[in-house]
Image (cartoon, rainbow, N blue to C red; front, side):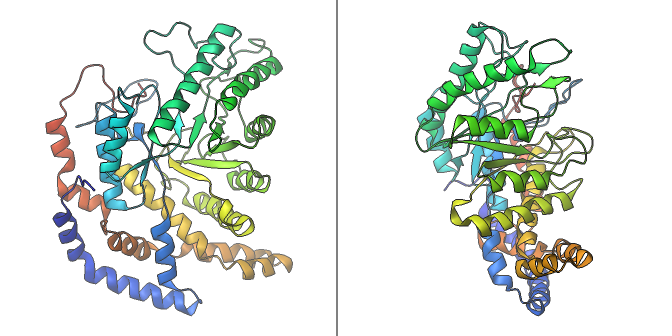
Length: 431
């Protein structure tokens, strides 16, 4: 496997931290043993965790007002893969990449797949883009895509999604994520029921093109760019559409696509209960769809989401395997550093949720011991599992401290030297 950061540097980094990490690991192991938990089992669990990184996330994002390019931004999909491989090399938790078409459309899919193989990466769900017009596109999406009143525009949007499926098949992907910004900014702008009818008609054509072993993930979003009535605005609409389409259609939950203070963990529980939880886009938010680093604002909410996922996994067994992906916009940080930090935070919540004593919690719930129920969750959440995560990385060949090791490596300086800014090329593809 090709590595982007010198393995000797990673080993030297780990050697410097080895004694302190072992001491912390042993101390945590003793504490967990008193609670009847095996630290080695938890470390093995951490090593099995994986979350995909978005190709667009390794570039600098933007706002509706401006974009400030970063040093050494990737200028094409091959350079994006290099950055994604560096993230996985140090975290050992991000072995797959989610591509966005047409931003990441390769001229040769086999060449792209070969590079991914060489870097030890696979491809997660592919994403379509009908929320902005592309160069040489015949029909505009200004007034909608899959819901457009123009049948020609809808056909164009459907054809693009089917093309994404074909590209994904060539790359080894197994799922298509569909998010549309379709909706209305003014009352009366369109017929609310008619828009959803057109959406379902379009999605039926896309669904029919899915290979037998594929899924389509329906992503909902409360607002933006449709500020009055977004067609797929909530999990209920997403669930209804996924149910109408069939068993290969599932719902995707983006943690930022809800009204403030929404009980996202309950949405997760509902979708899991009815077999329609397809996956996640992990990020954090303060006001709306901020796309902040995962766990940077509300880590307890992230933990509560994974608490429901742990419960669902026990109920459903091995068949329960939702897709995990980070989805963030990095405006003031190095995107690689933010993605590494987020991967660690999502993995942290995953391991913390495994610390919950399910039998004890069930007994407390049965007894209506409300405070003790809450404290059972807080006890798991308060446990600092950092030594487990670091040991899992080191044993897998990653870095004890991924961000520190990345900075020591000089990767960003080399990228800046090797990737001079290219006019009109955005690493993120967003703006």
